[in-house]
Image 1 (cartoon, rainbow, N blue to C red):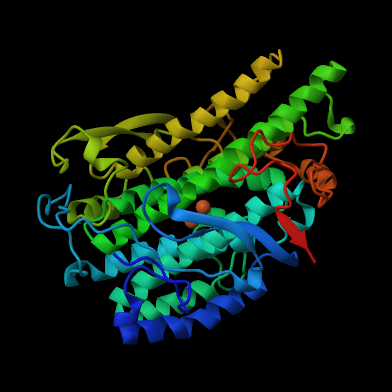
Image 2 (cartoon, helix red, strand yellow; image 1 turned 90 degrees about the vertical axis):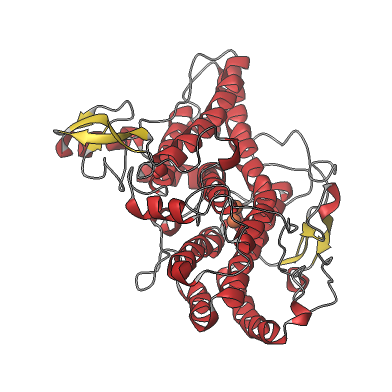
Length: 471
Ligand SMILES: [Fe+2]
Ligand SMILES: [Fe+2]
């Protein structure tokens, strides 16, 4: 494994210099990527941003921090170290050595999985492109840029695989990843949640909590893949992804903390006029982002996903910690279902229910966030609590796509849903209100009034550090 050399055009640890054809192909994709970043990436002009850049894939010292002018930022290709003895952990090829090349019979499926993952990465950059103009502090602004450059690097990670292992079709797909755009009428991003807007910072924090967390679980299943280069790519992406989760988790923490503080100071729930976001509005944003993120896991049952598992293309979350035969031929699982119009569960073969298995892991993880936000309310002496809405609420994919349900899981008629949905999902009034609070604070050490400052800065720097120099 080589250490990336930043003197090269494309820093990498995959020995790109030894593969001239691949190097040339990627070098011809690079200007297209840069012009995509220029036209679809962050709109706020900066002199430089305090960013972390990957310099190694191992241990604590894998990244270095420094002020980087965006024009000089270098996206690279980094795979986790190869384990030459790695064996396939599940499916019909369990126990065989991991594949270093794509087996012909799985080529189309693997390419599809990589394209779908790759499509989400630039999509979120597009969704977040205007947020810099309303950042609540330089610390938050810096985090936004950090998330954006890393999503850009995750696109590179998938494009590398497409170029290196999927020939001409792979190169064509790599081009398409730059042509589809979030929310575009003609060529939208593949998955629904990645075509929604992220128009304000509460949405950004909810997105990085709920939707980036979906990414974590998808990457977790691809990290198990028998196709070793995909596995190693995802392993390193997960390392970067941890920071995105931190931005979301602590971002919502800080919104809840500030709201709670103002509620206590004024002994009132009605805090909108006091310049903070009322808890019911926070709950509505949570409801929205959680429910659209649940859709990203697909239907409760899927024969495609069963086939991916059996073939070894995509495993389960923490596959190797599961105490079963890792083939699941005779196992079953209860999945959400609509039976005679009722919201209930039904038993299916474990293999077809794998989307449910993954969604369940995700839901358990999401409830961790809600618990911590509720602890903030509890510590403030407030009786209100946030919650995760029922799985049937606001779903567009899966068993409950055709019905309407309240956040507690009561089935509703379309008419009831239409009259009541404004109690549960952000209304235009809520969105306008939240946007009205989004006045930029670009002054060092200062912060907007609707959010508490972070407990810790980045890389041991204080909150009032000069994280970003604006033009
Ligand atoms: Fe990502
Ligand atoms: Fe992410």
